Image 1 (cartoon, chains in turn orange, cyan):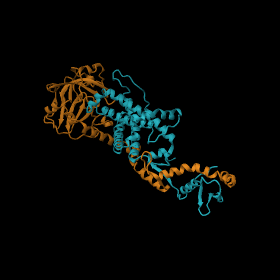
Image 2 (spheres, each protein chain N blue to C red; image 1 turned 60 degrees about the vertical axis):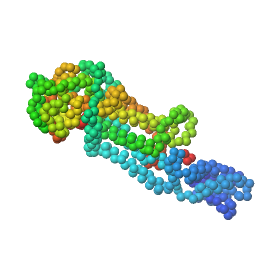
Image 3 (cartoon, one colour; image 1 turned 30 degrees about the vertical axis):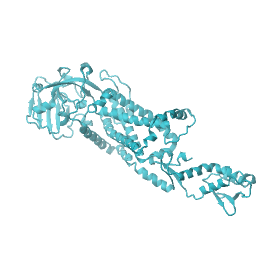
Image 4 (spheres, rainbow over the protein chains, first blue to last red; image 1 turned 180 degrees about the horizontal axis):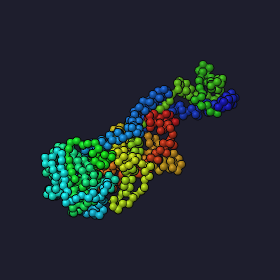
Length: 290
Length: 272
């Protein structure tokens, strides 16, 4: 740097150099001058962005002010703090469930399919959390009905089968991501709830299964016209792996809500923590709506 | 011999007609005698003096990105990271696009690259950040439409002819085409594609989340299974965009990156 300056000083001192100095000086400065005069002439850039000539202090102030507007992004950092992570995710899931409930159309039907679209029975997966066959005694089986109902007690399969039978080809969607279109037959849940004199203004239905599985479902879904107490698949009585003798079949709910091997149901307004559903209690969405 | 404006101060002496040059601690020297034959540069030097003289240190800055765009960008960036990570974890539960029986796996995803730990955890991340993704996306789109700024970004038919020259410049070291706009045609193409991918992943995601409520949309996409394929393709599109985007950010340096943070870019390139 020092050498540079001296060299300039020396050459400027020479008479021969005098003439060339303005030329050389003008070159690097020219762009700068033009830029500044352009910046002064217009207060916006080519795309309409505001241009300002500011002091370093003012620039720091501007930057700080703009940085503060990104506070919501910084707030997302709370998800990186272990203490806050799970509560926040629980809130996210709760909000999603709330929105799902709002979106649910009581009279909006899930798509039904022609027989040609139904998957062969052999390719309808047996899905279970513990055992495929909990060894239900089909002869003595009864469904215990409790809670906010006018006629609590034990109901035989024949009583359910005496209700109008619905048969539908609907899509079964698993939380894992696979789906299968199957043929299901059974009684409308709304018919059976009417039979037992359930309080239709109650909020939830809880069910227990022979294999220890348990579920709870919102009443609007239970009263949906396509929600079945299902006792048939593909025109035959439910086999043991698919939940004999009775299972839930709701085309507006995801697979893990479709409880199999039902043994009891309870109509209630209050769900107890830790008893909302086998998978839900481990972190799955409670609403599970499709 | 170049005089750098940052270390040189030039001033003129009107009375004597002498132009004097002073550098740091070097004695003022006579640069030019007004009687000399070389006069044509005088005005130029005078202009230079006028521009340089009243000079408390200043910085030219331009606000390149409105704060709503920056907010949307960073919220979206975080959400996209979480959604891709947790989405891959969800995909691991059934890494196939076919039937469950018989199951044919499409691809193996290393669990280390995923978010959420297990299917339930990944779903929680997915169902939480999808709102942030959609919210920030809507905020961006509404803002761009309301302000008319979409014209700066949205790829139009007239941009087609500019794509190849720009691609040649980026990838084959061709000459840099003159661009007198906020974004060059290749940028427009890339950014418009991401907007499209955002809309596509949202619509396909809606079908995967609520195939019964949005049954007509499920039907339009060819069914639940096809919606999964479209959803995966949208994610692949983002995975293709992100590395290219990050490389371009790295190439253009800190000043450019910083303008996406605070909006203000120092000494914008179009001012020379």
